[in-house]
Length: 283
Image (cartoon, rainbow, N blue to C red; front, side, top):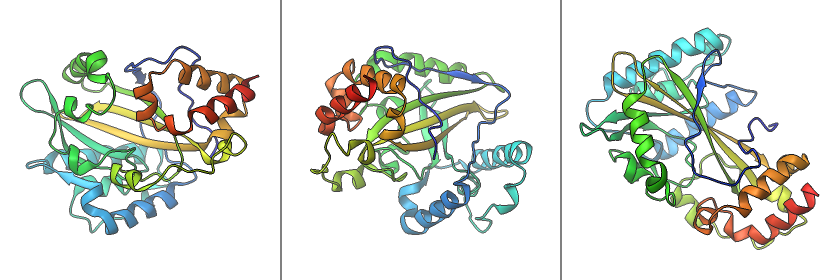
């Protein structure tokens, strides 16, 4: 897969919401891997259903609303793919919707105190977290593992969720570096993996992967519920470093990132080799 997104601009690393309005562009992005990834979703659903789908009570109507949104978006922007949708025998509308797209789909619901809860989700590409631990929990608890996130931007996130206007769609990006390009990387799976002792400056470009999450948010029609989508793009580090400017931007981000964040983003085990590699690539 060619490098689709590179959400670094050469500035010092900082925690930010980084929201951008979506206007004419679709919030769904099928590509050449569409059929392969839909089949992988189906495989994960059969093998790990309780790990890729969860819901709280009384989400059926909202899940049906998400399914309708997905169907309309696919019909408008990607009509040649809609006929290939699978999962028609699936009981959960949210899972049926997820089996039509490469994105993961998350329903966020106002808990009544201005704090949004994870009410239902179909997540096939988690990055170091487990759905079973997050379902039904408020955002500040979901974000707790991210160093300093709640302290620095927790309140703006809460305000954004409360004030998101109907019909408005936004996107943002998150990124990290990992020693696997597998989409499905829940916390329990990553804990079972050990640091690759063979990673060196010479091969790190092939063995580390630049993982970007494109996230979108929109309010469901006639509701306070919010649909949060996550789409993962993964590329070998070498594809990032082909461009000197990108290599320099990534190196600057690493150099200005706090240690706890480097550890959270799985960078710390390979930091020495990574810096040397990027310094050479950006020279």
